[in-house]
Length: 239
Image (cartoon, rainbow, N blue to C red; front, side):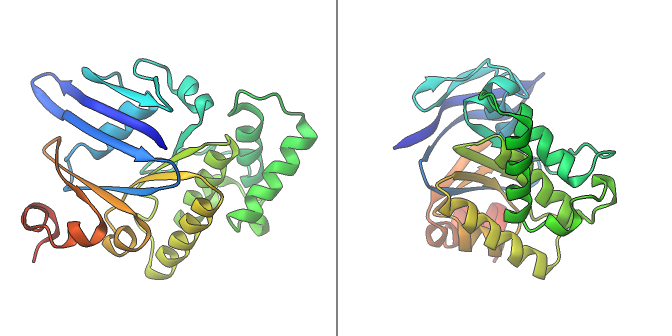
């Protein structure tokens, strides 16, 4: 089943076409990668999907219904959650409080404080942050800051989770752990759309990859097809 679809999605900043007539579709249960050089329009596309930016043209549909023009909180409550290149946490709150806030306010359901607290504890266990639950978010190392952002996104009960460079700045061990976490999330039945520059991760966890260059889609296919695409090699991967 198709869960997310974009038709001719376009975003102009003045005379610059940051995203130009991009078509895409994501099927339920997939892990789809979005790659391309810096400035290719990847994060802009994520911002259009999540409602952080208004589209100049085109249409985005989630589960068959148009979401173009909705506010970010409306889109989140429909079942789409995201993370950011730089984790946007409540820095002065504890790890547990960050997860609790998402459980209480991030969805359209009504949940009691005790149930939200239980859910927050379970999410911290899931992302392996239970041992640092009382630490302030601002004091966490980068890998843990990214994990608490994932926990907060999961607290909104998404069916589609978008990761924007969740592995940026991580060492090889942390990258391997992040890949394991993505696999665990997929096994929960959550569809994943991810921007990533770590090619080892993209090639190993994704079912399909979309490639952007100068705001346009230049390729789409399986990891094997993308790895051997002459066009993709020339503009992004290198020999």
